[in-house]
Length: 305
Image 1 (cartoon, rainbow, N blue to C red):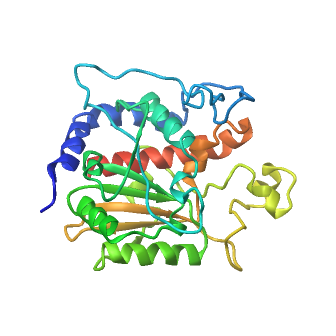
Image 2: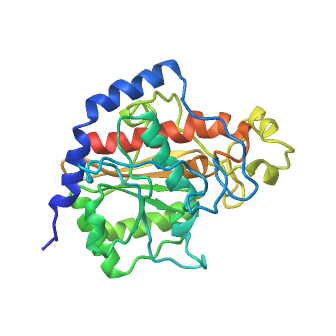
Image 3: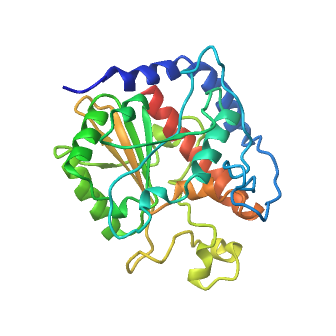
């Protein structure tokens, strides 16, 4: 028996009450192409756009939710999964900067109320069922135990949604694909075309965003990001094969056509969140026009479908 299956759908239902406000506010931003994002000066004592890791929030502004409606909010939930060959764990890549920055931008740019802190959850723990959206990063090293496979399957089939991100090359895709076959043996992922509503649900995008790490250009021999961008080079080289990897967004659907998750391959959307404060140039060319629009599109599409 699946424990508390209504929990996943319950929080999704809470968020759906804000859908109209979300669309009005965020579509207005998307049409003008303007993000109301504060300018920044990087604090040498910390990481992230807002600098300063000394307060445990990497300098990201804090805020409070409505005390009378403590559950009326979106909480960014990152999955801690079992893996191999990554030492401290691939699940921790970009943590906590990406989580905090994305939550802050959701709070700032949409009508969704976001939890300022986020959570770390596990597939084998029933707590995951309290969160309708979970984030999986660097899944090339994922190697789930049987209890995690079971918990992940139950989570998805009872209304949950995952976003997997930051893995490059066919070999890394194959590793993720094999694990997902253990979770959903009868489901084949679908490579979404750019015309799919996911890419235009709130912020209209005319491409599948490819987001590299902040210093990706160095491995290509360029002296600056602009030089690499002028040559159309936006991919990371450290793990791909003989041809430039094209970004792909693979969706997993249940037997009723509901999207249960999306795997962002040959791109690192979360790096645009984590490293938005690396340089003003990186923020202008990747965080602002690619990472945040794509992340918010995925989140709101998941919560409204």
